Image 1 (spheres, rainbow, N blue to C red):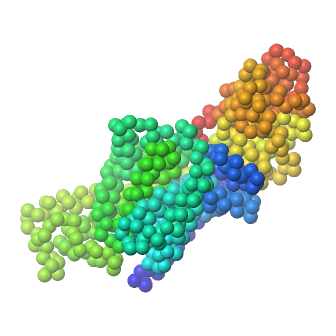
Image 2 (image 1 turned 30 degrees about the horizontal axis):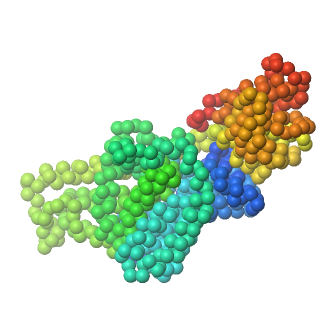
Image 3 (image 1 turned 90 degrees about the vertical axis):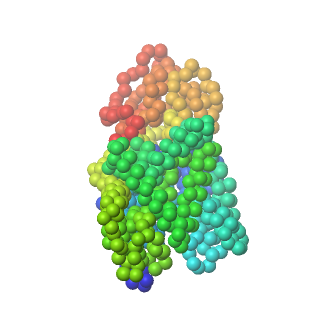
Amino acid sequence: MAERHRRDVVLALVLAGAMVGMDVALHTRIGRPLWYDELWRPHFAGEPSGTFWSELQVANAPSSLGAIALTRLAGEVLGWHAWSLRLVGATLWLPVLAAGTYLTSRRFTGMVAALGAAVAVAGSVTVVDSGTQLKPYVLDAVVTLAVLALWTASGHRLRDRTLAGALTLLSLPAVFVLLPLVVRDVRRERGGAWRSSPALVIAAIHVKLFVGHQSGQRVSHFWDDQFLAGRGVVDGLRFVADQVLATLGGTPPGIDRYDPNLVHSLVEGHRVVTTVLGAATTVAVLVGVRVLWRRPGGATLLGALGGAESLVLAASGARYWPFGACRTNLFLVPLLVIVAAAGADELLATARRIVTGRHDSLDRHDSLDRHDSLDGHDSLDRQHGGAARIGPRALPVRAAMVAAIVVCLAGVVATPVSAAGGLGRLWRERGAVRPIDAMVAVTVAARAQYRPGDTVIVGGRLARAGWLYGMELSDDTGGTRAQRVPRSATIFLTTIGGGTGTAGAGGAASRAGVLGSGDVAAAVRGRRPPSGGVLVFVLAYDRRGAPAALAQLRRDGWCTTSSQVFELTGTLYGLRRCPATARADAPHRPVERDSWPIHARR
């Protein structure tokens, strides 16, 4: 056992080292500007204490307290750079995920199956893609493995369970894993409720006070396709069945299959291939469930996985959490893969027993019970070294069984190959421009043009958090010494349009410097008296309203003097006073070519 343990530790370190090498190879990608939702996270993490709580209430997506703290720590210690924030928030955890998946799998499978599981999870191109961005999904998966390890440890149970509860502060979905473990303790162990109560209290306080404060995104329609909410009985059953099939058909199982901005496995989009691989994975998972149920710690893993899936489904019914094969559920991918790996390992052992005619298999795990054969034949004779007397009629049956197992195993083996095979595409696209990734550059340009007394209009529903991060926090500014535009001089509008010239609710809201909706001209008129020029930034997603807005400003006596287009991000307009007229606006002077549309980065 000691020798095996040393070998496993060495292999885990090798896997971790390989992931470090992967991170180094993708350093260009890690250093690219933050984009889309990456921009929102450091903005909320970096807010001053006086406005932190109020800003968090309008967060585009909820974050855990620990994830926000890690982001803040990275920014304060290493600087608010894209590379530093990604390194601490995501990239650092890829090697940990590889080692953790291998060591957890090794408790239930052989070495080869455990290596395959680690490659399928940490080496998956979709996981690596997420792990080279400022997103919490890789950390979520690591916390899942850590919670399971602490819950099944043989040490001081109260201490270990309390630590597991503390880990839920680092990961939002960890509570879905923790709750089934608590229920299992209460039902099966004397004193289980007492030992589990500190963990439950920590998780409950975090969810109720901190996460619940950020649940405003429930009204958004972004995740409607992944919510059970709003569906009838028949449609709900169809939805669950479709998501289960999508989960099992992923390579690896459970991985995101919908996000167009993530790189997916080699076989994604090939319906026949994914169906075959999904069928093989399903068989392996079913066998894995049977195997793990009889092994120490295996039932706990299955309880955590099944309970978490059930809770996620319930949460989707209340629009709190998406269900199915989407990126937010990456935290369950290691557990799904471990179950499939255990099943594949057992299928391989069964094929060997059939071929060699032996009923008993070599027990590669001292703690595992492998005395049951899955071939269902009781004619094996243990009294003669386990040799079976195989009659002519049994040979075709056994041959067919072996062939079926080999086909299934081939499908399972293809999973890590397909998952990691897409890394070449990730390498080729390591320098690709992504939506809204020039937001920091926009703020640098705005700083260069801004003069005290100017009014700055930022238009677009998704623009505010990214603008504030670039303007107030980011250190990726190319060394510019221009002053940062104060928030008090900035008006944020959720929509851009010309309007009718009346300053409605949007204008009133804008005067307070908070998000409002209304036409740009009304917002400018709300700044009485305007003492300088006007800078207008229009996010790419909202560009259709820009011509009407500029026309209205022209009628109010504001002429466009400059126009800078930032690819896939938006346009920054500079305006100065000119004689009021109803004529068309003056010609723009574009700085670089616009390359919209912007619906996807690839």
